[in-house]
Image 1 (tube, helix red, strand yellow):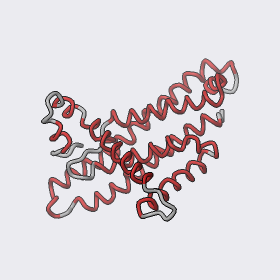
Image 2: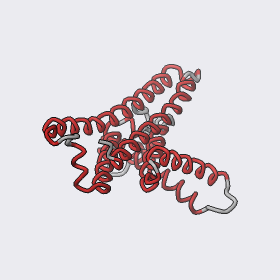
Image 3: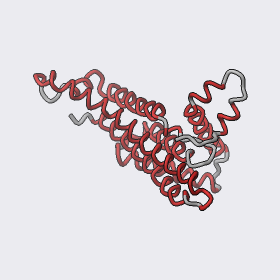
Image 4: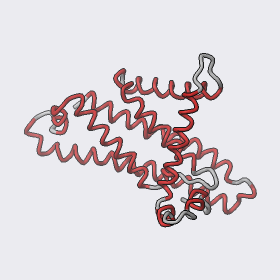
Length: 230
């Protein structure tokens, strides 16, 4: 669901040569905007770190500490090494989700290409970590408990891992597109009567939940690749 007016598209449309790109790929523009916002906030917070923290530093320290503790609890101590990946996924997805609730902005995660790209990053990171920790022995994970079962287990495991990409992609895309669509419809039909406000409040909560679920599944997949439970 796209808002009737997306300010980045309007602004960049005036630049020669960008008209087609900004209209065809608004999700890329707003994905870049989300990244710029997170980079700027991180830079300003890091630049102003003091022994007596201010409000911004306090908030960010609480958020980062909570994410790190959760990663360690879910994945184990070795999960600290991959904490930057999990924190980035959560903060990026949450920021993109929220942007669609602001008039003139657009949720990049309401486009299936964005959610697919994050799912593919998770997929590649999972198997990279598996090979890094176990070497070529990681391939045995796909062969099942006994070698004679390999012809049966390998296709099943491959389909299972590819299904993770599909699941991550469609779950996030469907939920965010759905909530943006409902908010947009309410805004057009009864915006003057503040009808969208209750839905927007719920959308903020579901935006957090979807970001949490996505990052949680990434932790479980990568943690599974490290422990190699099979």
